[in-house]
Image 1 (cartoon, rainbow, N blue to C red):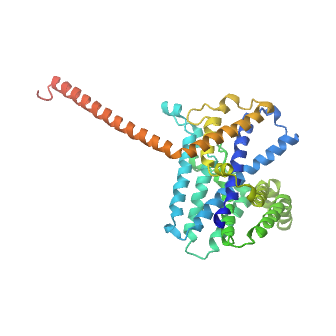
Image 2: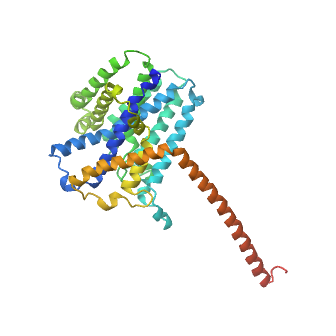
Length: 394
């Protein structure tokens, strides 16, 4: 096994951890009775804090892995096979994201519910991949430092100016597009600022790839992640307040008042450093397979919990109604069930896709035959009617 391949295992481990935390987070947040949501309770506040780490970690590791594979290819620009694969993947995620919000019963009534247009994590990750590809295509022929500079600058600008654009409703845009930019209509995630975590993950990947052959890579990268993470968590707010006191620019005081983006980035770096340090103990095949099956797990969890396609899911029946004695073991069972079905799907993916393809092909043949039969019947009936009316001769 090559050293370059072994370096990616900790990324799969991070994704496995993040997707499992997402499962329990969505389950508990969706079904726990509001009476038990007490921020003064140490257990609930701790759970709430760590739940808030999940999405930043997921976006960051997605940008990291995608860019690692993108720049690893010896080909560049449009010749890089990862570009076309990435575009296909990004569009695929967008299509799946909208399909998961589709309601079949609404379609039968000729309606598309407003919830179909809401933006979630899958939309933003898909669009983030397309943005990263765009940055790559625009800069691959230029000096190598330009690509990572644009990535880091994107994160910095999105995070710093968040207090300004978060108050904007973007009413001048069609709602389906505005939903990518504002939560005013009910979107769970928006491309701004969440693209920032994907681009910083992409930036980290470029730096990682540049020094990946160094035998001392982890010796330097772990302390760097930890130090930067701790500074962001404990000191970034004070730094922005100091900048405000020096410059008088209100924007920096606004960041100080709600500095969750930079603090969460610090959390992400700490998570990365922990998994890198434990990388030799995270080689379990099942654990890594979970990290490689995050899309399948996400889709299955969305169907079971939120009732994709039918509107019938756990959320419909138990929305904010369970006490901790039910919701905690329920969350554990939920993680096991979603993961089991996803791994089974991945194991039999080829056979399942082949069966679906065969079914669709057979269905198409039958529909064509039915269409031909209906056409012949309709033609016969039409000829008889025209003869009766004397419009054609017998």
